[in-house]
Image (cartoon, rainbow, N blue to C red):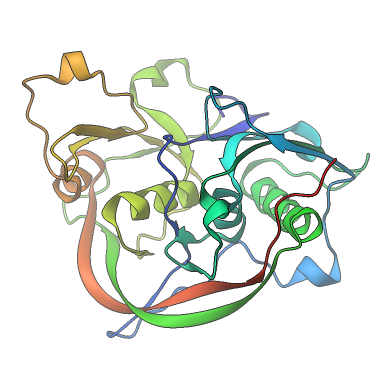
Length: 274
């Protein structure tokens, strides 16, 4: 995703905690993202798709959106795929079998020649629609929406202002600004790390440079958009995740009560053979 033609999402080996979130005790609400009503009317699909179990030693999970609407996935669970395709976080996905978040797969897929493909955020929405169709076809995924009460984090821009930079085009001087992440993918990963759904009140979208370093709940150095070298991190003091968000990215995460949108699985199967 470091150029305009390929968009890549790379996550830590720890599974994403899928979430599509939230409304609140105070009146606010966010529904399932990335699920356009046009899915049924004008479905976008892949013409050819190869799905096979990942090599246990392969890197990942990684999802790459390539020119022409092609998709390349390495080392990703079906749960991760569902969460990204529907814009939810792991605890919002209900009724899932145990294998959904353990078995990892590699996927190569491409649409028919001449199929719609757009650059930027619109292109990602088209790609997620194709992924939803792929899940319905090859995994027989059937699901419906629901809601439930849940503690959440309200994410806003801090009073001191945003300290992140939006990624636009290619910039050779950007190598020290962290990784380029789609905003929605960042929210999914952030929710996993915070341990509860995140209600986005920032108004941000698109792709951003993310470089966040903090101390996890188990006392270990951790990061988003940057690799932490344990040897170099020894002896250094890192802030908590919420403090790091405010000080390093200019984002404020406030605990609140809300009503959480969920995606309830009615049925799902392991991917069918190629």
